[in-house]
Image (cartoon, rainbow, N blue to C red; front, side, top):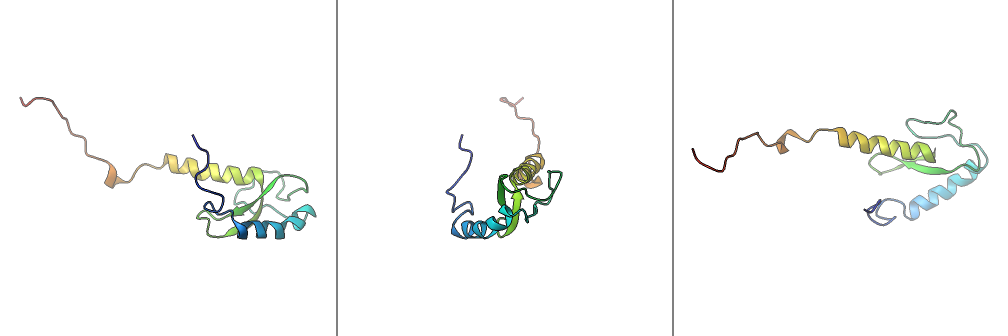
Length: 105
């Protein structure tokens, strides 16, 4: 089963994403960047130089929020995906329960 769908450009990681990440890189490498994730799972929001980080984005992928710990970004995506799984289907798609038999009695 494929883990990702679409190319990197289709998923929003094209040239604009790469350019913005290059702009943030010196700030993160200098130890002056803080995690922009909504819920930071690390003890400190500061991103320590040399640790893995990603460029976070909004839930609808329309804009970037800033650097995040790699773990915080993955945890945010997992929270959103799990919330989708727990949401019941819309009422319009739920069919009424009917008893169907193979004979007419």
